[in-house]
Length: 344
Ligand code: SAH
Ligand code: SF4
Image 1 (cartoon, rainbow, N blue to C red):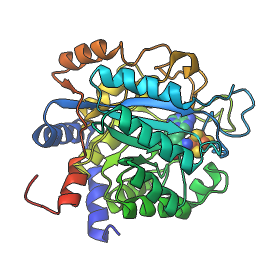
Image 2 (image 1 turned 90 degrees about the horizontal axis):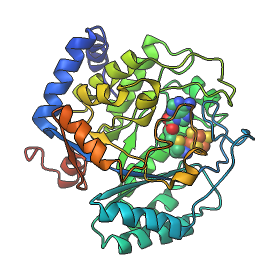
Image 3 (image 1 turned 45 degrees about the vertical axis):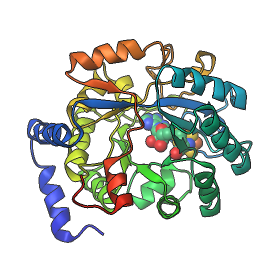
């Protein structure tokens, strides 16, 4: 647990101006990670979900969504095309879909590894499963797992996730860590009723979890959910949280997320300037994109992640950064795995 002194230190960080936070975070990013930005191919392989999270457009009770699930060949074709373009990390994200049993996912993970000659890192992001399931997925060759804790506030977590407790989410994160995955988690910024104390708790929990990757983004109210009338999170607060995370978890990989790009023009660039070092262009076949609406205005619906890579590379150059298509293992993870404190 973060000690009282550390907690006070994090609280004082949050009293600093945004400019000060961003300057320090950007300096740390530059020193430890350089100008490279890791590029991951994001594949939204199923929008079916048995969960009913109040904030999410894919929730079980949202009858407006046309549900889809890609089949193995569609997934492998998308991965192969991106691999041919040079990408070496893929993120398979989806709802909690019973049709994707762990056996089936394991076979897919193995097939991805065969088609990419074992050269690509594979990240899964498909919710809570048992420890044994996680172990089997890791044994099949999956490298990383993303599971945001969403909010560190226990009561609010249970309400927002329609009864699934924070304790259960944290157990899953513990299981993932035990299993040897490179572990990513994070939270939404500006969830309804969020207080300064909540933001502090979110940062403290991220530190406690010693995350290898931290994904955050603004909450964006979705009109087809019970939170339709709530205000969305702000870009300023998202930038502040990004910078604070870079300062607190200097070696973690931090993506500039789609939600930030959807909330505001230049949102992802603002995150990249505040310590972020990862981008995740969408490589889902275009026909399915508009059905994966976690929140409205998602800005990757009409983009072609692979063809847009040229555009991404050009945009990064304008920021003084460089697209890096390699595996991009987290420095935090490498240090933990190698147990070599002085190496990095
Ligand atoms: N089903 C998996 C992965 C898909 S959802 C899971 O829940 O872990 C991926 C992320 O989208 C969630 O972790 C959540 O943080 C984010 N998300 C969902 N609805 C959102 C909204 N309305 N605004 C911003 N982010 C949202
Ligand atoms: Fe399902 Fe994830 Fe959306 Fe929750 S956030 S409803 S688990 S897709």
